[in-house]
Amino acid sequence: MDREARLATDGIIRIGTRGSQLALAQASEVRALLMVAHGLPSERFEVTVISTSGDRILDRPLSEVGGKGLFTKEIELALLGGEIDLAVHSSKDMSTAIPEGLAITAFLPREDVRDAFIGREVRTIDELPHGATVGSASLRRQSLLMRLRPDLNVITFRGNVQSRLRKLEEGQVDATLLALAGLNRLEMSHVATDVLDVVSFPPAPGQGAICIESRAGDQETADLVAAIADHRTTVALTAERAFLAELDGSCRTPIAAHAEMHEDGSMTLHGMILTPDGAQMHETRRTGLAEDAETIGRMAGRDVLEAAGPGFFAGWAK
Image 1 (cartoon, rainbow, N blue to C red):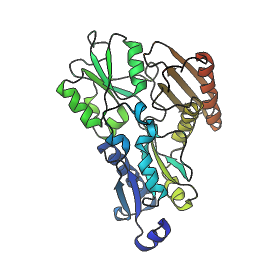
Image 2: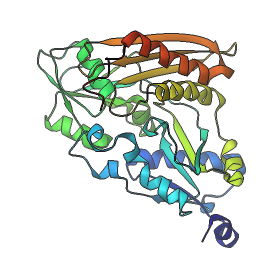
Image 3: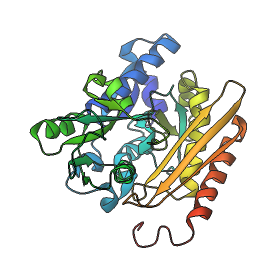
């Protein structure tokens, strides 16, 4: 049964999401905002949990098994098949190429973009002893860590927030890094022993922002979610995703980007690429009008590509 026929019979708006506590918190946030914006009761919404490959494959780095799409593929298939009406994602999990027939229709107001450091016996990166083991699933975080502390033993550390914190408590690693936005949404910010600044430790493109995906041409859903879309976040994410697209970025490449819209209508983008060992880094900063966000992102991507040279990605970004 297609969406129009289903809405005519039951009026239920189905929200697709991953099943982790953080994903469910994000879906609940979307539902709550839509309820307030449109005066709808909770009974009009149904949260549909969809298991993704990224949630099931935990023994290998994402870069080895397909990258970011592993957290969205099954949800997008359900969206295309009419099983759900809209999908809620962490924006940093979204590939730059959206499947044909789908579109990102809203970005919610952005949470804190910074990364949180969680040490088992120390509070900061600087306090870690020589050779300490730090776990992270993010190539960006791994590269930035090794740039700051090349003496550390940085390992791949998969799993949801709760499982990573459990592994930390068990002593499998001495420290880990998580997005502060996720901890805030889970009301767990107290576990952070330090919060890293965005200049020396810039976030992943899209970090801290929830996005809503729906079927292209579904104007009813587009109108529904437009009421909760945030303009400033949309501008920032447009620039960051354009930067990522210019670099053909994925989970295989350590890429950081942070864009901010200013009160005067301008915006600034800080973009960075690194080698996996953190030994080489190229960054750029571009400022322009918010309405030119995509162009600014593309130009920033070309800046770092030109500075890095044609051999920068050779041998490791496969």
